[in-house]
Length: 250
Image (cartoon, rainbow, N blue to C red; front, side):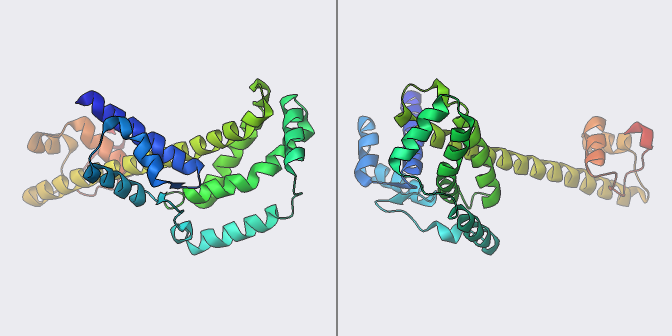
């Protein structure tokens, strides 16, 4: 059973990645084919489709991602794309020639190739919008990954491998940025909960004793450790008013 769940999770992640590569869109038959080895029932497959839709993946056709952008982000994207429109338009032959030169280590070719893919980075960033990070930051992370990837093109054997490698690096960088942002937000909530818990307990005890309480008294009455209480005081910036403490003890 556990092995089947692992395969299901891995398959779902592969489907989401494929959808990203296809403009946040995937065909119904592609999904069915991906999960064919698991022999899912129709109701289970429908749950997969519902999950993908909830995560902004279009089934058969792309979803409108403009709704995920704030007015500020729309203005930024419009201005940014107008700037990119001023860059030279390269033919497929020119892009291949630039890629070959970049693979050989030519700096000017690498610089020109970065410009070629900037619009693609912006398009990918729009697919990741609405996940708790700014569009501008997503584009910035993607552009850094793009420049890094172009510096690695010398490791490829063929120029037609470049685009896939570069866009994978761009997507990985955006996903990592979203993940780190989410982790920081979660950590922030945990800190706030801890501070609020200690503050509430301190207020209750202070009301009973009609005075401020020490960390040691609070620990004895609540079962919280003195260390945990002192950490909460520090994280609050020494703003828990009902605790009496010496500055050098924190």
